[in-house]
Length: 340
Image 1: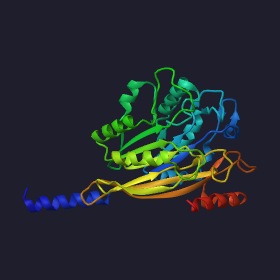
Image 2: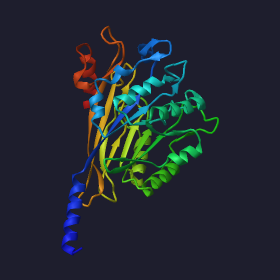
Image 3: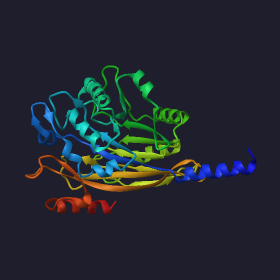
Image 4: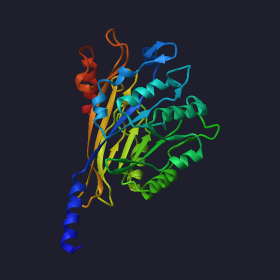
């Protein structure tokens, strides 16, 4: 092949790479309080959450890959809310049917039903055919599962998930919870990159509950993850929306997205700042040499409306389409967001 033809081929290849895009969507904490269980009850053993996500289904479905933090174990019976969560499998089924592809399972409620509950949660998610990261039935399964790299419209994306703790409940057997540990995270990021990930997402369950700004530990860990070369840092646990930042990797100059907390995707929390959350939509593209980059990110704010005479379930709404009787509370929630 002549040099002239080779140059043309290279230009065409780079142009095609530069034109390609993919979108990721990240949701906050999918909680399961007792009132949500009661609202979904239909008959013994039957719980229907299908209507909970109808209003945001288009937002989720429009993404090429959508991720949610499942902040509850999945059980077979004896379903309970706070302080020890245990949700029906139909809850995860409704989240899957709403369009979520990946479930994050490393959070402070992971061991609410102890090792047995963790194992059943993983088995249930496997039966639903959804991806999950953060907890594993044993060390061997973690070794087989990590790195977790998903090809999304030609982009090879690695996903990792860690939690600060599990509410003082310890692992008793051979299950594995990915706790925040700098050495472990560095090894995982390195292995994920070496196995072909072009971009790496690290989901962190961290920070202080109900605090509207990131605390020092979050900022320090974010700095550390940026230094490791992570491209997207997605935070949860505070149950309120905290700011997001678009930083630059000091070595490459490429964008690094840091979202400190996406708040609650759905819950029965009732204070001004906990009634809603944010979906962050991330656009991936390729630069002039074909390298994958985070090119844009934006929020879609959501608000949870409790059951009423016309709707027996909790329903997640886009913030700008909340029913009239809840608009005052939605405006208060939105007003606080503007101060961040």
